[in-house]
Figure 1: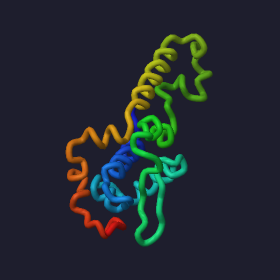
Figure 2 (figure 1 turned 45 degrees about the vertical axis):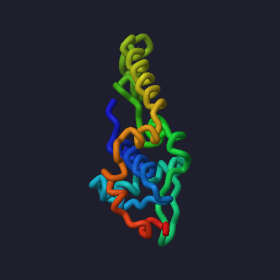
Figure 3 (figure 1 turned 120 degrees about the vertical axis):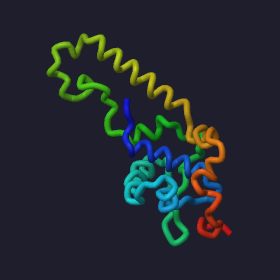
Length: 154
């Protein structure tokens, strides 16, 4: 299975928030760290906020932060809200009735087993695991270079 750019950058945004020592992260800084557009990241935020994975704070000193502890957000949680479909083949789609084997196909069972294994592994990894596993993640994302005042702290 191939995840979309939306899922990839949603995870990266969450890793940034987990690694950010400040209370709030700012989308422009996250976009700059990853070299993507702010508009793209704002689009990704909507489903994450709706699912309670991310919280937004409006205002001059606003920003985003994790909606719950990083160790309580799994990769499965993220992929569930950012991916439109988990269809690995046409037989997973709604129009699978065209296939005469749809009800008795061993391939369909194999695809389902593989998908369940994939999602099961994602459920075992948290955002905290990913942020902690990367040596000096804050430095690599430019978090050490951000002034404290710019992040709403003094």
